[in-house]
Image: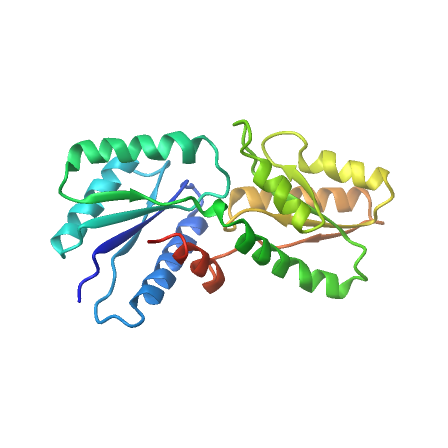
Length: 247
């Protein structure tokens, strides 16, 4: 039995090779999960919105042609973005529309909800990152949920909601209140056990920069106990959240 759908995981793209490697690992996990109970292997590939030799619409049309050749009549496009910013609301739909003009009615292009819409599941993944640190500490650590941030009105509400669920406070890498501002507020309020929870999918240049900021603050104020959690990572649990976005 052939799969009627093929699946394209779309990320932002990075000059750092680690996110792309993680995306390929995630695609492999999703391929294996979809393959369970089927005799044929589903088509699962990755694409990048930026920093790729081809624009996204050309990546989509190329994959669509390969999918049609093996009998797929539908391409499910899965944006692996945590915030409902300009990329999710404008850029990706525009690229899909351009791909549709090229492909016509030869294959259905189905834009699925972005990953950040899975608030409950993502909250659970972040809580799992907090627990090991809490076991080493008496539970009085104040956590900061650190997101990239978006200037699009309303896009950061999910970060606020996520922080509330985790009894943490939000901060942003690209907009205010940023990490250093939040940490200074907490230090002034008397907190000495701080935790940084990066709301990012994979390690990369930004998570390296976050680690550098945390080290510099710790060096300036050695009385602080700063715990830096890992980003979400290409895990079976994340794969399950992506699977829930498919139809």
